[in-house]
Amino acid sequence: MIEEKTIAPDFTLPDQNGKDVTLSSFRGKKVILYFYPKDNTPGCTKEACSLRDNLPDFDSLNAVVIGVSPDKSESHMKFRDKFTLPFTLLSDPEHKAMELYGAYGEKVLYGKKTMGVIRSTFLIGEDGTVLKVWKKVNTATHGDDVRKYLKEHEL
Image 1 (tube, rainbow, N blue to C red):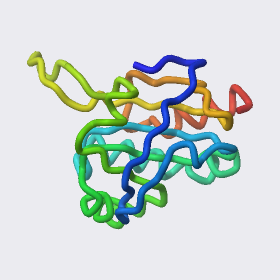
Image 2 (cartoon, rainbow, N blue to C red):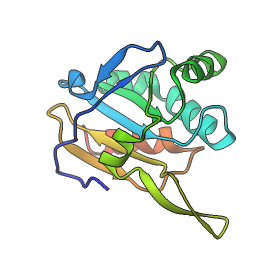
Image 3 (spheres, helix red, strand yellow):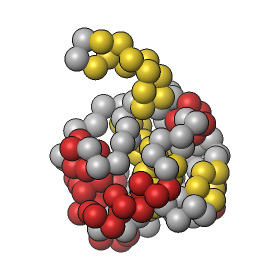
Image 4 (cartoon, rainbow, N blue to C red):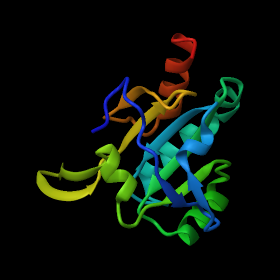
């Protein structure tokens, strides 16, 4: 998994509209890059809504939210519309960005080892440096946790 104080690996993936988005195009802003398993599932919905609910604070702190999952662009569009998610969702069905960040691999679910998306978040600074990594995420409070970190560290 990518560590803090390293340069965030760049990548290009299609967004919910099928338009290619490159991570480095957000230089000059902080990026809350979060990897999640699947649109419209209970945990992923809680996490997305938690981030959505904190968006006004993120905006005032010069931060944007970008979600990445293996779902297709069409699924992202429906997910965004259903839950009024005003941020970018990227499609990574081949796990390219996820593997770059260590957000895809072996995990244990209900005692069984499986391969899949490892829910994680990376706070990337304006210069592209990883400022904070959340390897374990409480889906219900994640937006609050990120907001508090940004404010406490005056980022």
